[in-house]
Image (cartoon, rainbow, N blue to C red):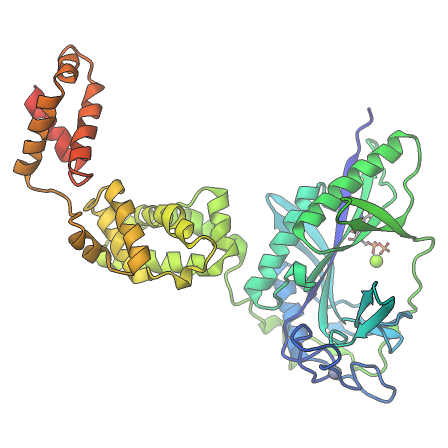
Length: 483
Ligand code: ADP
Ligand code: ZN
Ligand code: MG
């Protein structure tokens, strides 16, 4: 069987979350209003109207370009992309052709660098809603003129997993930058996957484009499906046809939409109603634009190094959920202040992380961490008690559950439920004596050299004290008595 390597490039659109639309002052929240309420003559494309460039949108794209390691062009411009479609009343879309704002960047996915060819800015079109039952199609222009960023990668991706990984990482970056919500299920981020198979001799194959993928799952599944389909075509000795395919969600397969005989001729030309943009100059000043936030990759490294979080799935919970990460970091900071020992950061971080994942998030059951009754200050008190070994892990679980239910402080719970550790040696001795009396067969085994029995005896002491004895102390006293 011949070997083929998948060659994949992505084209990703993301809606920018600016206050107003790209070229008019209509509010940019298409989803909020009923159809055709956020519209004006400019975004409807009436003749005689003039577009005005939204500065915030331009700066958002430049920021994204910086975060994605791109070069930013000194002089740029908008172009007209001409085509006919009912959701595009002007008959052209204002986009960028030869002079995109950003070019030659890259994004690291795992340990691979995926090169970015370009990032440009354009306006979105309207939305057609097909009503099968009434046999009618309706057009909503709320979305027309919404600023859209388009990113095109080089064909550097080699697997479905990497394609999904790229889209996921891009979504995170756009969210961290605050330039787009990039929710795929709301159409705020849309992915197109270009796929071909490369033969062993390195020759690139014919590419197929899959359009309208609206979840990470479908990006992965459609890519996997298409790799398999193309391999089968080639193994049958046939040729892959250059075409655009769609993804059928129920049948879980790609299907042919239209053959791409010749490249589209959009007859691009410079948009005559807009001036060229000098991005070095006011009001853009590209060199002065700051990313201004910690990017996901930096945060991953920091969480590993500072708090010793080493499980990938745990790090990703922090990376995906900013409120969980903030809650955790605030807790650790408050706990460190209390014990006044900054070197304990990793250890305290580990305790906080463990109880956060195994108890708090579990009890929240998908709820928001900011809504738990255990605020960071209360959680920090609790973490300090565990750190100082004032409560055993068994008691800690009882305490955190009660804190979650009632919102009481850890110390109050411990007092009310009589859970504080028995530190009185006499009291522990009494229990140890009881255990020794009750466990004569085990004691005999111990004296015959079976030292594992000690663990069993400590367990009994812990059970009798309901976990309130310190295991270290129980161990010490037991050994003294037995030897
Ligand atoms: P087109 O002219 O058909 O639009 P482009 O060169 O603009 O093609 O590339 C569009 C997308 O297709 C890019 O993401 C690019 O990385 C990807 N691409 C280009 N060539 C291939 C190929 N042989 N196999 C897979 N993807 C490719
Ligand atoms: Zn408008
Ligand atoms: Mg192209």
